[in-house]
Image 1: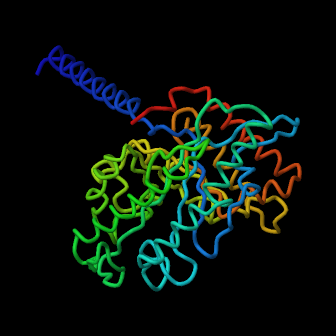
Image 2: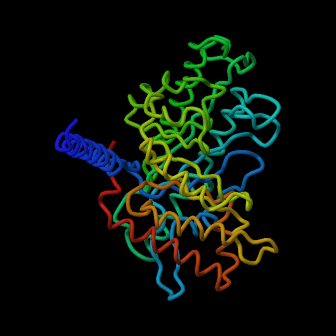
Image 3: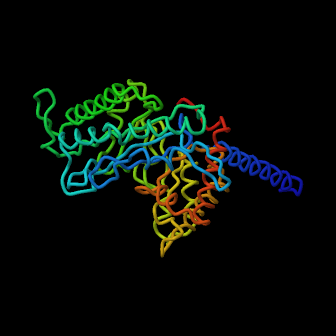
Length: 364
């Protein structure tokens, strides 16, 4: 081959490689975090006997935040009410207790969820009181409620319309879920809340190991109610990469970094990468241990989330769900040392500023 032909071949190869890199770069720029009708979703663990009552006072640090300079502003625009077990030996999702919850436990959960002066009612009242104290928020707070899991092989759940259900049968599992969804929707509507709207339903099982692809079987029923179907799988949970196929409208990815100091901060970047690869949103995580006054404080772990989410554009581009343990923000508010104030002011300011970002809201 002549030198001219050799140079021409090399030139063509370089062009081909350049085109390949340009294609990869373009694909990378097209990766996006998920957004939805809620920018900032607070997780509220409520319903089991082991949980707080969630009174109006307990909701205050989640509804608004008072900064160090004395100014107050609204905080989360959405609230997810969820529960894994009843606190008395029965589970609403596989792997959390010894026995499976029956219809009677499902109904007791509903009664607690809609109890006057607590839970949803307390949140509605807290928002109303806050509106009178500061100003109208300019938006309606949105609510996500939990769909219980009909656990395969359970035969003692109970009856619907005189028919005993056997969860070995797919149709019976679907029937139980439809009944529960109807209960959630009708009871919520009957309360005529002043400040909160039902926006979606949440699948409580965090992977697809036990329930297989069952969410697909109830997704259309949830959508027929005009509601979104929401999921928050743990880090790299089985099924996380198939969340759309499973019928969900949005999925938030858990980094699971906060809870173990042996896990390096690189986990947060990896979690963001996985979310971007799969078009997911992100979960922010902290709990009561973030309190600076704890002997073994995890406040630095909480700060790591803030820094990583800023660096990776999560606050600018993603819907965010906030896990704060049982009453994490109450603990921070009840311990107003300078360190706690600083980290909470920083997080709250980011949340407040996100309301001006209209790209974070869509109706999907």
